[in-house]
Each structure stands twice: as C-alpha cells, then as structure tokens.
Amino acid sequence: MAPNTSSAPSRNTALFERAKKLIPGGVNSPVRAFKAVGGTPRFVQRAQGAYFWDADGKRYIDYIGSWGPMILGHGHPAVVDAVQKAVLEGFSYGAPTEREVELAEEIVKLVPSIEMLRLVSSGTEAGMSAIRLARGATGRSKIIKFEGCYHGHADALLVKAGSGLATFGNPTSAGVPPEVVQHTLVLEYNHIAQLEEAFAVHGSSTACLIIEPIAGNMNFVRASVPFMTRCRELCTQYGVLLVFDEVMTGFRVALGGAQSVYAKSIPGFKPDMTVMGKVIGGGMPLAAFGGTRAVMEQLAPLGPVYQAGTLSGNPVATACGLATLRELQKPGFYEALGERTRSLVSGLTQAATRAGVSFCGDSEGGMFGFFLLEPLPQNYATVMTTDGPTFNRFFHAMLDKGVYYAPALYEAGFVSSAHTAADIAETVEAAAQFFAGR
Ligand SMILES: *Cc1c(COP(=O)(O)O)cnc(C)c1O
Image: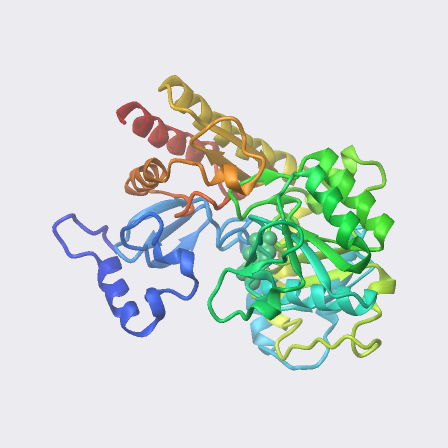
C-alpha cells in the first residue's frame, strides 16, 4: 500500500473515530489511546522485524514491541514456523500437552529460583494468583508493594499510599472498594528506612512483598543493590515471601531475568516467587508464576489455594513462547542486544547534551528508559517531575519522523534483536534534530 499523502484523510483518524463508537476510548488498553501525549493513535496494519506500518502505510521503528514481548522483533521466521505448525494441530484442548511440560522445563532450567511453576494467560492473572498463593501459603493477609510498580490490574493492587504507615492504601480506580485494598501497604521504592519501619510494624503479619526489581512502569528505575539486599534480608527474617514481578524484565534484561542481575551483586540472591509474562509468550497470551516447591505445592489440585484457567498453557501460545526462548539461548544473544540498546541510550544522551538539553538514560539487556532531566530518578515521585509538555513534543516529533516510543513518560522502551545499527542511527539523528531545533 502506498504511503498516505498529507492531503488525503488519515485512515488512522477514521479508524479511531469508528473505534470510539464501540470501544471505550477507542482502545482495548488505556495507554494506547495517546491520552497523555494527545493526538491520534496509530492503528497497526502489519509489522516485520523492527518495524510496523500504520493504517496510512507509514513505517515506524518500533521501540515498544507490544510492550516487551517482541524481543526477536516481529515475525521471526523460527517463531512463525512454530506457531504455524501448532495451529494446524489445534488451537486449544483444555487438557495437558507435552509442550507445556517442555516450556516449564525450559523456564526452570533458565531461572534457578523457580522449582515449579504454573502457566496462565496474562501478567495480571499471574500476579493476582501469586499473591493469593503467598497469602494461602503463609496464612497472612497483608502485602507490601511499591509506588510506581505495576503488577497488573487485580483489585488489591490498584492502590496508592495512604497517609503514614498506620493507614493502608487508597484505591486508584473507581470500582475498588476500600476494604479490598485495606491489606495492601504501599511504600516508596528505594527507601530503606521506610521499608525497615514497615517491617518492624507489619512484618510478622505480611504474606509477601511484591516488587518490579527493575521498574519499567515508572519509565526505568532500578532497585538499588542495598535496597534489594534489605528487601531480601527483611523478608527472610519475618517469613515474608519475596515476589519478583518479572513480567517485563523476565528474559528481557538477561536470560536469567533481573534476579540474575542482582545475584551478580548479592551472593546467593534469589526471590521466593517469580511472576512472568510478556517475553515468555513471544507475543501470544501467556504468563506464569513460579517459585519454591514448598510454596507451589500449596496450589490446587495439590494444595488448598485455588487457581484455574480454560486457556492456560494454550498449545499455540506455548509453541510461540518455546520457539522464542530457544532463540534467546543462542550464544551472544544478550551481549548483542545489550550493546545495541546501550548504543541507543548513549546516542540519545550525546545528542541531548550537545544541544544543552538536560537528559539521562539507563538500560539493561533489551530494556531502556530515558528522562528529560538529570540525574536518574530513584522513585516514582521524581520520575513524575519530568516536564510533561516537553516529553509530549519530543514524542510527536519522533512519531512524525517514523520513530515509535511509548506514548507516556512513565513507560520503559524496548529494543529487539531485529533492530540494526542503522535503525539506532536513524533514531538518534531524529532525536538530534528535535533537540537542536527546540
Ligand atoms: C505488563 C505487566 C504486568 C501485567 O501483565 P498483563 O499481561 O498486561 O496483564 C504485570 N507486571 C508488570 C511488571 C508488567 O510490566
């Protein structure tokens, strides 16, 4: 299809108008609506490698990759082949398959803290189930989470900090009764003194602490090594399960996930449970939660904690996930991906610095973040001090030049193995033009 000329009406706009009549906000997940940045969402027609084409036939370098899953880029031949074969053998059976066992074996092999796991269909479902299991296994009700970390949209997790440690959270969504979040304590990320205070008061009645080890839902913020060390120590001391939400970071930042990154700095480091999604499905609806055998054996049908799913372990999704995980294990995969991602962040930083624009960024493996401020933020409140209007102008300038970043300043970005040095150079050049011209 020929690219749309500027005089022709945009098909993106026409589709958005049609969508808005039937789908709330015109989208099936809120951030897609471009509400924060303004303008018209791009309706994707097709994607290949590092690119997608919108409804007007315009090409974009894709730094979202379905919000993380597409680590091999779009339409990787080995993955497409596996999915096509699987489809011919049936879409879903509601009965066990060898492929689920293979995927479980693969994950357990690559992530040493996981001894057993269960497959589900979304990160939300995995996080929600992990928390139920943690509560069931410990017989405790309270949970600790951190401001700016996202663990899916289960009721008990849609919560912001109350005033002080005595009061638990307040719902962040209508439709969540205050009673449902009364056991959720929300703390500041990377704040060791507050963490210690919270454990002193609530530690012995808390089931789990859930954390994004490298938070990708407040742009890109690492838990500091001292903070993570303290999380582990306090959880062990008080019998609280440490739950790593690696839905975004799992197989994205390293083959062993973010936990393998922390294990390099903290000897013997392991979480008790891990939640995964995104990359493990390779773009299909697939997620998982796993952990120690003692905890996982509390799950039905072995134990008293109920959890189920009609499409769990779906044969097409598991084929897609398995083919993806196999590609990731090829020698040098993460070295090359990490190098390419670092070259993007350093290129953007240099372009901004040359133009006198305050800017900083960070990355791990194929996940990155950048900020129109300095230095790197350590928590949600600081991330949110980013100048929103400038970010929005940057976003639209890049979009015009065919570079697709997340349409919100609190989202991380993703590079795939399909992104070439030329793609990175084109991106950096587009950013340099924006920085120089502002
Ligand atoms: C995306 C994400 C989720 C939710 O996963 P869904 O598949 O969208 O339900 C949970 N936790 C983290 C860290 C995520 O990035």
